[in-house]
Image 1: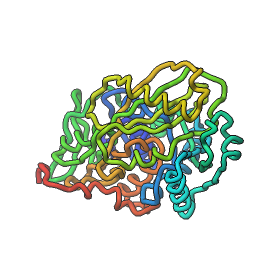
Image 2: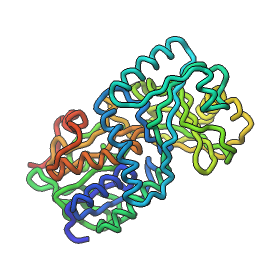
Image 3: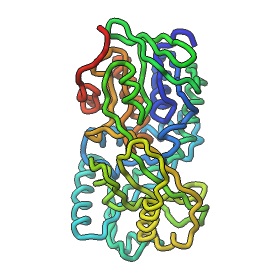
Image 4: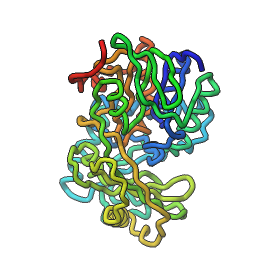
Length: 385
């Protein structure tokens, strides 16, 4: 593609959704990735499309729009990525935890989230294998799941069908600027000209900003997932302990984990979730895996009889204030960021693409994007003026 209107760096699900939204708006779009589609954080995700884990905030507004956008997208491109409106079940087994869950769900209901309170009998009716120790839960019918690698691949296919281009295996080495504006990028192989560059590189978004002489405090937050062998239908929803919400919102660098269990279309069961800030340290930590297994069995005792198939890890792109970064760079015109979603990138991807596209094209945004602006991290830059 000669002279694209926009270059998107990153072919994970956020980059793919952003590219598709830009193409649908009539722009000529080139997507670049140093690897293949979904070769970064997207490929290590569970495919969560959640509203249940969001407190009333701008991120919840983004999540509600994105949940609906996923199903619109599914229809638009013909599916093929195992999108399932399975619903989520959040449990708590302490009096304090139950009180906090009731308070949160009431607040969420006031923001348009569907919530259904369940007693012990109600829980057993929808999740018969759940531990008898669970006497209270909240059902969130809007929660959903997809297969994230398939989603990114299918969306990128749609981008190409609609006139966009994708080049994999090219690592961006510099963001080219002139008079404080973006003029393109240079990879290890070639220079590409464009007045718009979208940084959708997830955990590595801070490095791309640095290439442009700017600043973005995106850091990796490591997490592990266990995968069981295929099993009969045991888990019918995404089921997790309410502590998960607190862990997501925490800024603690030390290990945090809470029980998160869900089935997949193929029959495998996914078990999480852990969070810790250890940089890009990729060691397989058996102690963390054991902890995740114990927590999952405490929720679903039957899991003790099902063999584990494998474990894997990924790095969530973590911003200090736990909000994604969606908007134009604080220091450089034409450089846009769509990153920092932490563990919610898959769920928030379609709405992120819509929001950044509206800003780039001067269209009407579905919400005020100010809370996500990169300008909240503005500091001294090295951008040439």
